[in-house]
Structure formats: structure tokens, C-alpha cells
Image 1 (cartoon, helix red, strand yellow):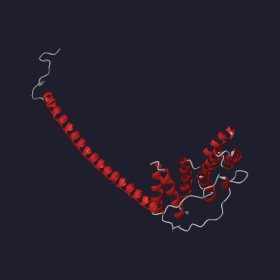
Image 2 (cartoon, one colour):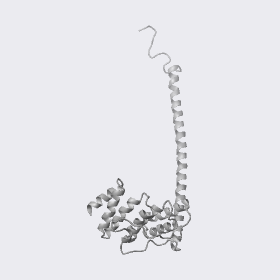
Image 3 (cartoon, one colour):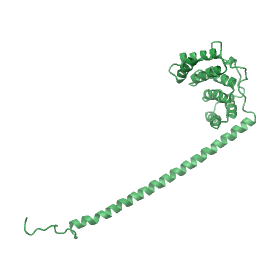
Image 4 (cartoon, rainbow, N blue to C red):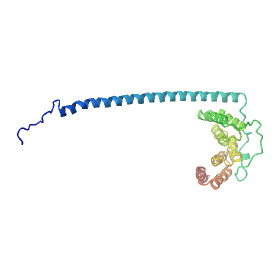
Length: 240
């Protein structure tokens, strides 16, 4: 060890280099904490603004839904909602002897209106909301009214299918069978055709028409292979 040297070095703990470094650290840490706090406050303010916007949007949607319900009730009570197809003792008129749906006689849509996509969607959504509310009687009337008013709408195929589902939920097998059969008759290229035929087979089975149900299931498997309806049809065909 050299003479004159000492430990710790000179300046340690004084106003020298080591002391200066120690004095700057707390100030830097405080600055970082202040910046983080300020950033968090800004983020909280932004989140509060987003929440307020979402609350306003929810309130607006609720108001629109209420107006749709009121408009729908008014149309139904005033007689604008026409009934479904005439009731029959069975769904025989919907299929031929082989169980294949046959087109009905041409029917006039006296109350059909010119297309208006925005208005059509409003009516369709209002009818579908009644399904969510499990008000199947009004839903059936609403979908029937929609189809009478907008038979060529882009939503008509779906409306025809859901009319069948609603009538099935009500236990009206005849009306359900007629509605399901009409999907393939009036909208043969619609994506709901396989599902509607499968449902029609279910209706025929419930009515005790196993031969017709079997024929429709075979049609679904042959014409729509690979579809979920065909898979379900294969399963049900094995049970008949």
C-alpha cells in the first residue's frame, strides 16, 4: 500500500463527486413519480369520458328500442299485422307424397311496399326483439306483417324462417310447417333453406308423418351435404 493513501477516498460523503451523485438521485425519482402520477390522471380522465359516452349510447339504444316496440304495438293493434297462412289439419299442403316441398298457388301481396332497407331493418329488428322477450304471439304477428309488407326484402328469408320457429314455440305445428316449407318455395337460394327443411321434417315427425319426415331428411342430406342441417338430418334419419 502506498503511503499517504487512505480509505475511504477523499471527498466521500462531502460536497465532492460521491456526495453530488447521492444528492441528485432523490430529485430524479421524485420527477419520475410526478410524471407517472400526471399520466395516470390523464388516463383516468379519458376513461371517464369513454364511460360517459357509452352510457349515453346505451340510453339512446334503449330509447330507440322503446320506440320500436311502441310502433310495433300500434301497427298490431290497428290491424296492420296480418295473420299467417290458413290453418290446416296437418302440414300436408306443404309437401308432396315424397316429402318434398311443393310451391303453393300464387298469392297476391296487396300490402307490399317499395323497398327501403333502413325501414325494413327497423321492422325486422323490432319483430326479432319480441322473440328475445319470449312474446311469441306478437312475434308471429310481427313477422307475418313484415312478410306481407316487404316480401322481397333482404330480410324476408330470415323472417320466413323465424316465423316457423315462433309458431313451433307456440305449439302451432300446422302454421310452423307451412312457414318452414315456404322458405324453400319463396327463397330457394337462401342460406336458411337447409335449416328450414330440417325443421319441416321435425314438424312432420311430430304430426306422426314419419314417411314424409324421412323423405325431407333424405332431401336435406342429398342436396346440402356438409351442412350442419345435413348432419342433424343423418342423425334423425337413423332414429326414424
